Image 1 (cartoon, rainbow, N blue to C red):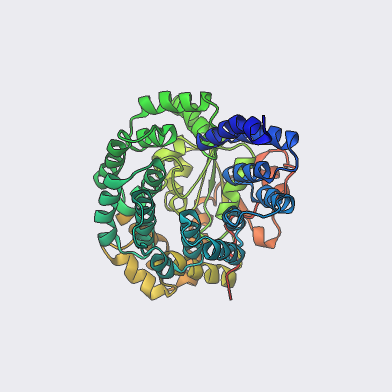
Image 2 (spheres, one colour):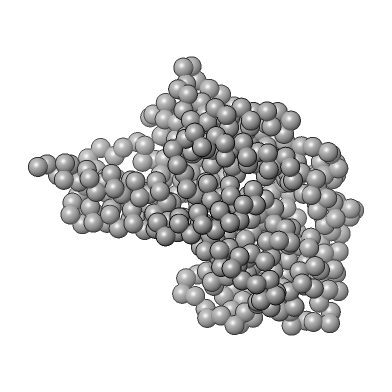
Length: 460
């Protein structure tokens, strides 16, 4: 029996485990294959896929480098994995370069094409990304469906929601696989806002899912998004018992534990709320709190994709980003044992990053134009609540500097009589594990303090 024949069964098993979200199981199978055939580059590529799925880009790049060393003729498609890993690291320019090499070598490779679109979106080049999605002649139905889902994501980024909504409905109805449905699920809340429109979108996806092969994770997320908590609990528990260990696994466990607790007990838990403005390292704090064992959520509920709301405070131990800023007085009153962290950043650097962020996501870095955008009835992701929130925190002020000063004054007033409930934390001035762990009473982790969502290094 050939090596390929002996390896085929465990290779199929590893691929099936990875597709089902059982990343640790898949990685163990690929390690076994790599041990049995250390010169076979395929198993290193399998380990790279597992590392990307586990959000471990450094490990993925190491595995790809080794595979390319072992292979007599490295597969050009491996550049797709490299591009995905580089994007996870925030190396946008390098990711784009890698994906363009794949696109040149394999012009019909859908995965490389879609990955390049994601890189262009990350670089703030949404219009260019939309052009890159123009369908080629005789595009197969499955590829057309995947392209449609990405096109809708770009229309949302560009504020073309009136155009995106009918396209969303058509794409859901025409979806040929669960991958496209998962992309469309992630767009439901940004596209439809809250309330009945979003619920209608989620129900449409659920109806289409019933006609496709099972996707337990998407089913679980739809149950939660539609408020069917009884079935959510049973399906989420079954998914975790099946060995699912994808990135959402800790979140599902945290929410299941929270749903099992009485509300009064939850109010007395030592929760943490990060109340710094956007672009002050709130993403890094979210990752850090997760590493310290807190069930954490940043900007949106990671299960439903809806913006964080008061109900989410009962489901998570730590919340961060602008929705938390908006409701911090309510959170302080509801959770008397909660701690609050004001993330800070030097004013000029913060304003520059804020402008770059809104140019990338909303097409404008000008504060007056951003104010006009927030006054419009449509054209912004997440709908009326998002616009009202931006007006309260930012655009009712004369400029960004005034908005920042007003926020700091609001925080100081809220905790004037309880200074021990507030930690001022500045990653940019060197604050890290020691200060955070001392405040929260947690041991310092071995890994370096995370720096998530750092400004990407773009092409010149």
